[in-house]
Image (cartoon, rainbow over all chains, first blue to last red; front, side, top):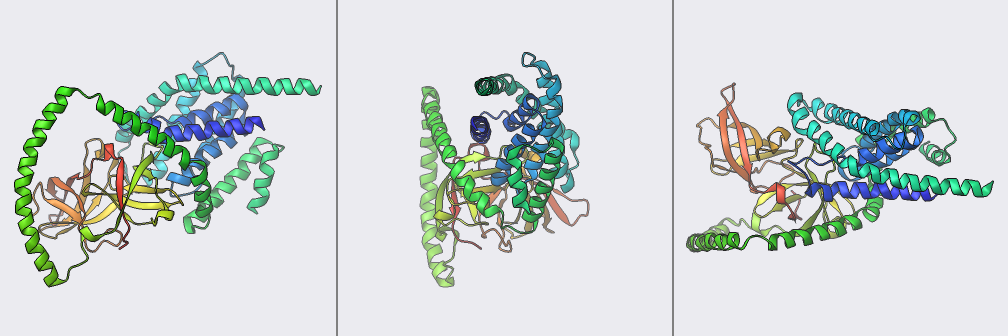
Length: 172
Length: 284
């Protein structure tokens, strides 16, 4: 139960920060994708199922307020979370390089799919422009923010896991 | 159907691929429902208004406090220089104002004559604060802190200063989202103020960084529309009230069909520093 509440609060805070705080810190109109960092981190830290649920909730927040189609972003984030869950087996807490790679790839995929569905289908064909002016800056900014934000998520998750372990041993 | 699925979710007993399958079906179902009807969005918006909006208001208040602080710390020299400039501008404007006053009397007389009581200045407006922005980098949608409880409804026009900002696309009890005219998917039917030639103004993400918006389909056979021409919303638009300033023509060229023209506008509103907006409560 504690985990559910804490994870929900993390998602809520990330959404709020992304909509307000990081919009002021936007560089050249580009802001980082915090919700994606949360989704992928929970994917590879906790496995496919939790990644999927966290991703769904992250996307749902965006859908309720800023999307024409309910569940579009939820769908996208859900698959990102699920896909990151496949790396759960080769995930080690001490290593930060591999998580960075996964988050980078996830953000690229996310932007690319967004581009296809939201822009390409409306005849916006200039892919090189969108790649260099929107996707690439977003990924770089996101990776930069990840350096700090990911450690925070990792630390919270560590605390939660400790607590869960203690409780389990109490029952035995 | 959907109720059963939602109930199963929290138990975490299914293998993850089945959960994924069920959730995928749920998502596709919801997407189809919201694409065709809007009975699902209502409750969601209400829930959102209790969970998210209070926090966003708080954060934006803190943010405004910081902006005011940093503004105060601006260099004194800069301020005194600005003061001089403004003083000169006041003189300029006073002269202009006098002329306009005279024109106004004439206008009032003529207006009474023509019984044109429904005018731009008589629209009922309400002020609102911008409290959040679209989290992605693709669109220019933002959230304001007034909603249906304050009388705001979908498709109402939003202004800032003297220019058009956009229109309301979604309303909750205490919040609403606005799609600005610089948004890539926004299109506005407009006309040139002097000649009443009609045109279509559309946002374009590729021009956003240069501060322009696109326009096209301008039927202007005499080439009367020049750079610097004022562009306002047209009287045939079904969403926008007529005569609201959109921006000024900054570049214009003939299309290859030799009939229509297109080019770029400079919007009248500074979209990068939008903090307060006015929502016009009259619907077209």
